[in-house]
Every structure is written in C-alpha cells, then in structure tokens.
Image (cartoon, rainbow, N blue to C red):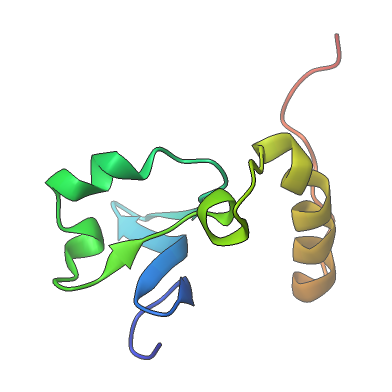
Length: 93
C-alpha cells in the first residue's frame, strides 16, 4: 500500500524491494519470502514500519513453497516485466 514499497498481503510484507546509493555505487535488492521462519520477525520492527508484519508464500498458501518452486517463474516474469535478459554470474560446472 502506498507509500510503502514491496508486495503486500494486507498489512504484511511478502516481498521487499530496496535500493541503496552511496560512494557512486547503486545497489538493488529484492527478497521474496517463500518458506521463511517468520518467528524471527517477532523480535524486530520489520523494515522500520510500526504495526506492519511480514508473511511468506508458504504461510499465505497454507503449504510449503520452496525457493526452487518459484525461482524460474519469478525470473521469467522479471524478464518480461522489465524487458531484459538475465545472465547468471555462476560459472558452469
């Protein structure tokens, strides 16, 4: 919900998106909570937002959703939405 970034399910963040700029370097980040242990978030104020929570795909769907289940469709959608080609930084082997 505006003005908060990310993907939300009600008052709980499902996907965090961030940008950091400093020393002439820009870093981008994205975190999609698939099967995250949400109890860790009980000890902090997530993203510094009082009264907001954190959720995961597993929690919302009521079944285990592992990262490897969503990685390929997520990357495919990312390429389509941002009209780009993703290149892996991992060397084969």
